[in-house]
Amino acid sequence: MAASLLPRVASMLAAATLLLAVACHKESENATPSNDDLSVLGALPLSAPAPADNPGTPAKIALGRALFWDPVLSGGKDVSCASCHHPANGYADALDLAIGVNGQGLGTARHFRQPNAIPFAKRNTPTVLNTAFNGMTNGGSYDPARAAMFWDSRAQSLEAQSLQPIAALEEMRGPACSESAALDTAVARLRRIPAYASLFSAAFAEPAPVTATNLGKALAAFERTLLATDAPFDKYLRGDKTALSAQQVQGLNAFISSGCAKCHSGPMLSDYQLHVLGVADNPKNAASDAGANNSYAFRTPSLRNVALTAPYMHSGTLPNLGAVLAFYAPPPGAPPTANPRVAPGQRDPLFPARVQDPQAIIAFLQSLTATSFDRSVPATVPSGLAVGGNIQ
Image 1 (cartoon, helix red, strand yellow):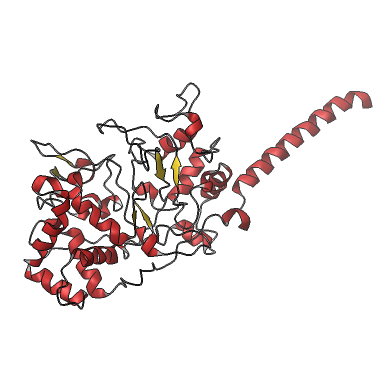
Image 2 (image 1 turned 180 degrees about the horizontal axis):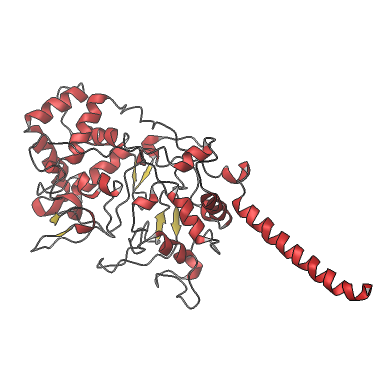
């Protein structure tokens, strides 16, 4: 009798052990991450520091705001900064590759007018939300005058970055003038507009304040006000453990255990380093985009407000967050890398070996979306041109 019970008892013990293991696994998935795990991430500061030589002032910010929305800076007076960095699209453009000069419309409705000889912009448009924090890492010194900008980190500081699109053929310059003359042309236009003469004089106490340098400073001062620091994840890190759902906590754990935080770290969820991933080229480009130093390396993008800024990667070839996670965990039979010009051995060693629970990770990524950023659009701009350019 007792002997006949032994197999049944053993079976019950095995089942109980399995149930306990499953329960422990689920509890681990939903457990609050330890302080050590969370130390690789960080909440955003509530304000952004400015370089010592460009403190933000109300007058300078007002000038920068006008310039950001005014197409007078573009060669054909048809494109403004806001054409591709619009609040309706999370201060990005919702396109794989930007349409600047000779474009019409906003977001996914934007298209080239015909006839057209202007190429698409070479890379996907990053958001300017929170770019005031670019380069910020946990525990490190932060210098806004040396903050990495663009996908290839070719510019440091918002002041330097803000001027480059004005001189780029496909972004704002067009065929109206040469690259070397673009900034001088824009400044000359501004000097002929009385309202800008007044705005520059109020912002900069100089005898002749309408200069390219001050143009960059004003745009940067305004962009440093485009902050979004109240995401549920920020609230969670600041102590409100109810700010994330159970699935988002599960996704946070999976994000860390999958190795995503090795590169997407710090307050901006970016290490601001260049990495080779082998992302596919966009077929709209005439030539392969070889990235920084022709190495196919690109800077880690911030994941702040990432749910607002699809499509993804430098080439804009991944349409949604699910596709991004599938890129890191390709199905059986997929090519060894998405870009045939990048061999698996060239890929950065931090490339994740696996992705755990992608749906939960997507839920976590949605917790990085803030709601309180500036969505206002000015009624007019000093040039009298269409606000934002040809975006209607």
